[in-house]
Length: 339
Image (cartoon, rainbow, N blue to C red; front, side, top):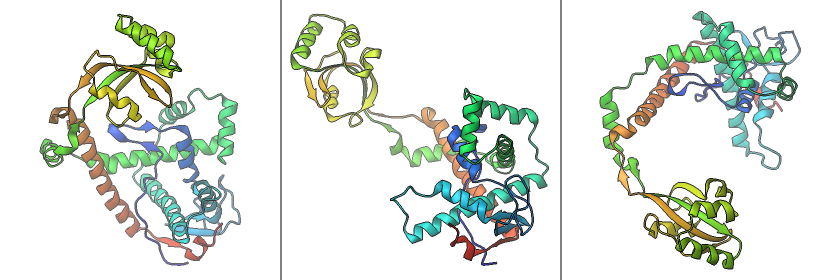
């Protein structure tokens, strides 16, 4: 076997544990993560996705668990760039090492979960499956699994493994993170400039195709016609369904023609403004002046940021420790020959 490769940390789980609980990401992301996490525990001969012996060469051993060339190749194809955008040799090498790193870390985490006796209940598994399937018809859902190289049984196994990793992360990392009020306050004081809220307005618009029609509508508005009614009736913009409501926005967020609203007083009408989209009439409904957000307003956001930072630090150190204690062997020649 070649040298043991050292890689940077990658989050191997398909479950988002942000804000204190497991939240299921979108289905396509789950299927992507699942395709990267196929586990075969066997010998140097390797095994298939269903656990049967097969001839695929072994790329790596992680405490005796195998990662086969076949498994690695499947993951590589999933994440390889599209045709016409082939990475440079150095980037391709880095991508291969990164994918193998994910597979190695998944093995280590599942081994640790087993060592600690962590289990997934039938109810937990069924709850996640229900959330992931959503309103997908069974036939369509099974076709989606098939296109990802999965059977329904294998898919359930992968979900179980991801849940095991998530539980392990909660025990070993999330439960250890404590953020003090003083830390939040210190961060706020050091990064005060980051919490400035720019001036923003809430405006409505009416958009029509000709200047003549815009002049007619503008005259009606000056004479007291209801802006929302005319927007709903006359505007060609999709926001007509909401009476032309554009919501809140800051200068520069919209096309430059919209910046005229920042010169208007609340409830004032704009002159007719021409843009590539047509002829606009704007009305400002609310204005928020620039200000700095208070600590009370951003406390929870800062807290979550600090939690994420600490979790990353703990995770990185813990994964490094797991790797240092593990028997990891990689056939580095095979790694960069695999298609």
